[in-house]
Length: 451
Image 1 (cartoon, rainbow, N blue to C red):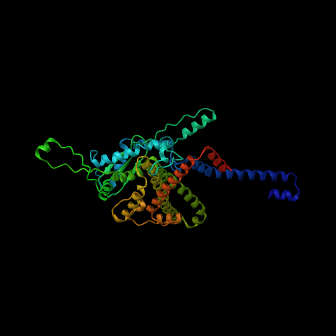
Image 2 (tube, rainbow, N blue to C red; image 1 turned 60 degrees about the horizontal axis):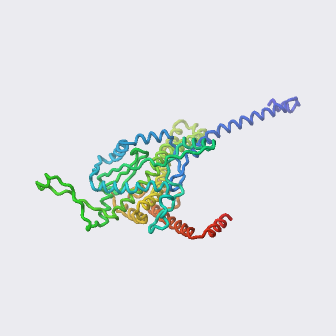
Image 3 (cartoon, rainbow, N blue to C red; image 1 turned 90 degrees about the vertical axis):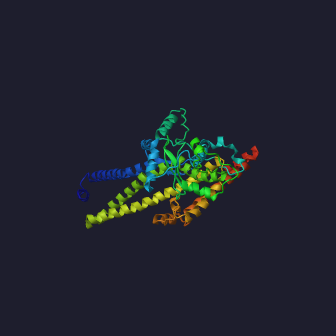
């Protein structure tokens, strides 16, 4: 009002005061906008800094856990900690009965797992350690664009950046994957036809649990080789002298039995190698709840001018509605994460099987058969939460509508695995065609590509 009055009556200096006032208003507006932008910028900087490429597949994923939190998690699971954690999980269905280490089934599963773990060094340098992938008579994977390497730490990134700024050679990172050899437990449970993996970190921080129902299912479906004699079981002299009961019969698994067992073990081993447990923990405890909490608070602030007239009861009802909605959205996020990890583990398990000497094509028939048996076994538990007999939840229906597909999850996994094997063969043929070109033809192809 004062400036307007001075402008009307021609008071000198009014224009300068007006300009100064407008400048102050503009500066305060910019300062207020910067204050509003700081949380958003920090939020997205944390998101970008936490992004990383998944080994072997190259999928972008988000893990928001500090190195100290990862070290604490690995320390809690190291040694006896993994057995305690898995024991608590198994105890939810009653006291578990474990198959002893001297049982032939345990030795068979352990030998198969160690055979698969022996391929881990190959995954770190496939180009150098697997040059025969072009001439193999069975499907072999092309060298991965993103090899299996240890997850880098923030301190390693900072040290590498400083070394490059000083024009010094960057020291190599230790090329060892923490984890193998992994722990193994066999649980006596005939009604469970599956296995699961759990854990993260070195010193026995991860492992696999296999149920006896899966082993029994393999032995029942595939005929045994009767031509191979079973090795004699050790018997004490006291039992031999008194004619005690004969020792339990020991089966000799065939290569077909071992192949079916290896497919399931390779799937669970892929979960461990890709640190899916860490990704799930980060998503379920940090990313999804934190993001939903931020959006819920923002929405409550925006609608508060309307709800404040109706008293605290309406505000409490809105907050309760937000918690219920966030719970459903959390389930949707966890289901999406699990689905991506299952597809990823299938693809990586095919690579493990191929390097271990198995035929990766048998994984397709294995998962197709598992999709059929999941509908026949009323009490069979599935590796994939969506492949059981339980009715599909609203969250899963929502995800399938968003994805534009109504196909069962097992069919989608089989299709993904088939497309991966087709990609192997396509790249193999392309590499063979390039290898047969003369140097002049290779140069001409490069020039055509660049043009």
